[in-house]
Length: 342
Ligand code: NAP
Ligand code: 12T
Image 1 (cartoon, protein in one colour):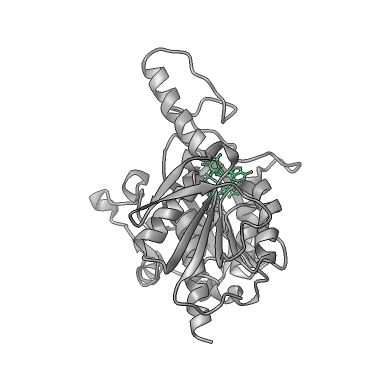
Image 2: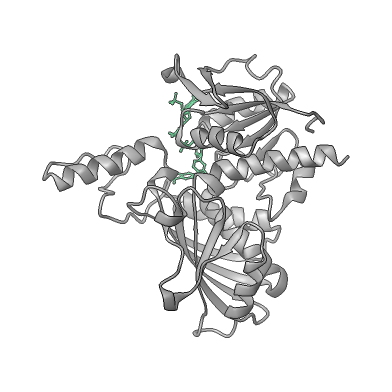
């Protein structure tokens, strides 16, 4: 459990990456009660520093003693790094909020989106998992609908930005775009195919069942976060040549009838959600507008006329913020709030 304190010693593990960088920015922006910030990355980053609240903080490498004296560690250094270092950190008495896929489906690790299942934070044993980016933005919208109309089935198709893969993928999209516009040959290092001016129906590894790992994360994590294994979910995840923000087309079937207007009214009142839905004025959420925003944006809300109780919608959020760094910091804020109320 997190001790009750005025300020905390916080670590960001993977601080030099796309998510880690954003974590440092979010901690500063939200005036998180930081007594001291420690930054960690691989040996490749030795000698680097990052700015935080006006000072230059050195990036350190990890060792067995690194977590001594640290209260909260936000991890985003890949599943392999988390597998090794998250238990070391937890053993040192640190509360870990892990962004990788390593611990998410472990039964004794809570998988938390603060707007959806903050109560699951109560039973953590030192490691709390931050869900997959595409799942986070979807469940923030599904939860209030599920509470009033019970969702039976979800069919989702994602349009995911390259920043979800990390810094190297952002560089690859930029380089390929520049090369193609200059009639040069392109190189594919991060993705198996050209990503510039293309759509790849392939995110993370393929599994035996023909789905990708990313697709199955959406199926399994949605059920765990919503605390309801009866919800049927099927996903197709697609990488698109967008730098930031994941967009999703989501179709749901509910047990109870709910109209598009009722969904709009319900979501307008939901914390962390902004309804952006005026098709007559060409208003709907767009990746380029939502980049840098904290909320989950929703538009194109309409009834699915092919079934009795169905809704279609379009959900967009910044994958590095609500999909990763912001959600992790909100988890830490909730833990602090809980420590202060006991
Ligand atoms: P990235 O830009 O490639 O950054 C990776 C970071 O991890 C860098 O700081 C890197 O340090 C560090 N790192 C790599 N290996 C390490 C090691 N052995 N020891 C210590 N640090 C190490 O990737 P990213 O996009 O930020 O993603 C990082 C993690 O967040 C991944 O686990 C990914 O699955 C997760 N993630 C989660 C979501 C989500 O859905 N919530 C979204 C995106 C990413 P160097 O700079 O020194 O190499
Ligand atoms: N491969 O957190 O490539 O499990 O966009 C998130 C994003 C894994 C994850 C991606 C990935 C995760 C991606």
